[in-house]
Image: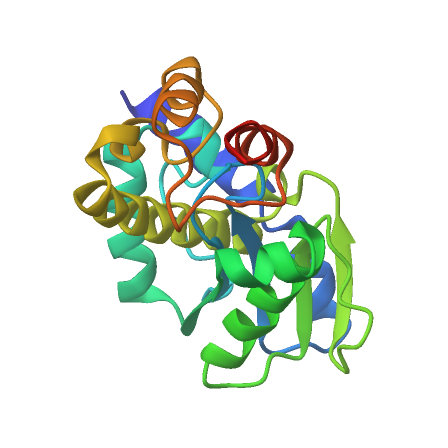
Length: 216
């Protein structure tokens, strides 16, 4: 048991290597930024932004996709309790269809950063580059697996978006949004083919676009 705990503490400590470099360079407030929901056929894309206390140990902190739903929900609450600041940003289906998913993701990320309520000295962003941001930033491929701040942001974004999709399920139960969260599963595609898209489907995404074309 103690051996497992020691191993977990060592794993989590490695997630702070990039943050440590930022602190060494003079940054005081380092924010991790990540998104949830770029791939689904329905619902908004959501971004999270989190400023963690330096080197705070959060057991099981990781990329949200590698954490169980139960642990994600527990981490979501813990992050809100201990974080210096937490921000959430959403980009609607309308924005996704009007711009594109990448630009909508950037908009959601900017909203999440603004929602922090404080201005970070440095941004650690999972993959995406915010070219018009005046804040120094580092864009990290699969950053949610190597940065504590980005991992925390991924948890915040994922849990928040899952809650939104559960609410959408109550409005449109025939699609099964509570189970697949809008991703293009066999169940979802079958329902989409049978019932057509609902107002919260992304009309610019090929599987939805194809159904709209057939129905027209």
